[in-house]
Amino acid sequence: MIFKKNMKYVRLYILLLTLVYGSSCQRQNKNTALPKGKISQVPHGMVRNIKKDRNGNILIASFRGVFRYDGKSFTNITSKISSPSFWDVLEDRKGNLWFATRDSGVYCYNGKSFQHFTTKEGLASNHAFQVYQDKTGHIWFATGGGASRYDGKSFRNFTKKDGLPSNDITTIMEDKTGKFWFGSSGEACFYDGKTFTVFRNKDGKAFNNVRSIIEDRKGNIWFGATIIEDKKGDTSFVSPGLWRYEGGLFTKVSQRGAYAIMQDKKGNIWTTGELKPNGGWALSRYEQKSLYHKKPIITEIMSIKGLGMFCGILEANDGSIWFGAMGRGRSVYRYDGKTITNFKSK
Image 1: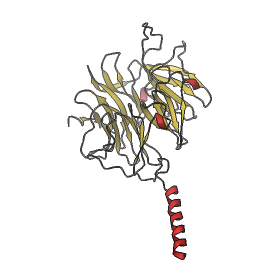
Image 2: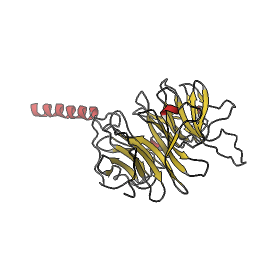
Image 3: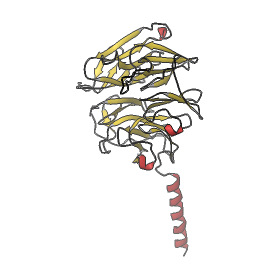
Image 4: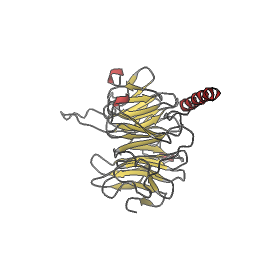
């Protein structure tokens, strides 16, 4: 009888441990063990985004997998997932890895297993462009059906019904004041917690097809806009290029397109984008000392003509610049200040 009674308590204790140390993607240990993958595979297919993990390793989201570069070799950390096309990757503050895909929703890896989220679990769309974590720890997803916010238990979706001007969200960014900025294939806007407001130039024109938004060290907002003609050929939007929002005013910094934007440790602004509509793509650096001049100094690091494009940008811990690309013979590049390394060709 005593043995049976003790076993009853043992089972109860095990059950409590299971509840406390469950495999939820919001209850993760600080040190995430990455799944074993295929070593020394170079990222292939279009490289959309590049991020860092907490150890400074490079995380690369490509159409053929998400890869980790530890300074020596590449590891496909999504080799166990049946080949969706990946758009973005993020390690959250709890050590979970999140993967956004083109048409398969999002995945979360908590150190032991993958958890798959789709519209069945409440995601706004299975087409996820970006993963973003806000100051409160919530995970946001920019999707083709609106913006989805995940609190660890459930999703809350923001769509045109809630005031978004477009459901085709491409990027999300929270500024220092707690305001959220949304880029989309339609009009871009910001959200103050109550109201969505389309931001417009002084002549009332909206900014369209915004793919990247950042906040610089001074608290100013940088973004890129692109002209999109409607079916009638109307181009009533602002002219394309790199823009800055400062003190309530919009300033056009450059005619060059800005698909991705980043500020490095020295204060320089980096972009990837079209040199002109249908005129080739370039990785460009806007020198810190002239950022606020009427004509900032722009250094063109690399350009390509014809088919192909440059995508996400990252500054590694050693100061090197990593950027993604698409096109024959291209995937991911590293610029160390002197030499550009094409890992695909290497």
